[in-house]
Length: 170
Image (cartoon, rainbow, N blue to C red; front, side):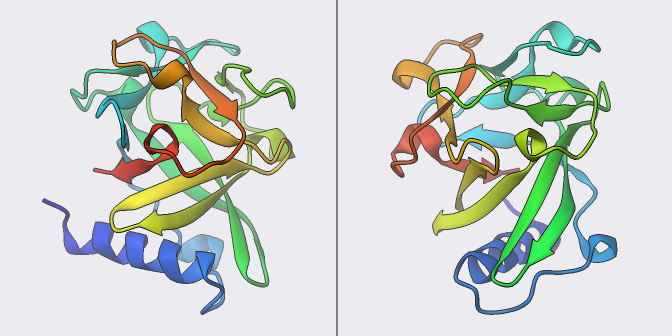
């Protein structure tokens, strides 16, 4: 069950995506860690093996709520009608990052430095469903090949709104 703060985050994301109110300041952004649960596999966004290293693979894994699965959603830049966030891992302190603009490229973690490849537009797509679009590539966070097993690499792919690209917060 979502608590009031999480519901407020989902509502704010929906309104931001629709351009119905100005983005919050960085000070007002949620800083508590969240689990991002894939809408198809029901598995969590996770840093493989709890790695602390730059370049560590990001995968889906059984949701257990440990630090490698917890992500801080932090405002990087607010523009009229849209806000860009970074996702900073609670375990490593590193950010969700795309190494290039190619569809199918697996995402990884990297030291947070504010580049566009670490910035994500969070869009409310359906009740309790978010889509994350990378600012650099314009591609969405995606469960590779509609995969169900834990350990599957998370990739970026053309945004299509399919369940493999939808995420819910917990």
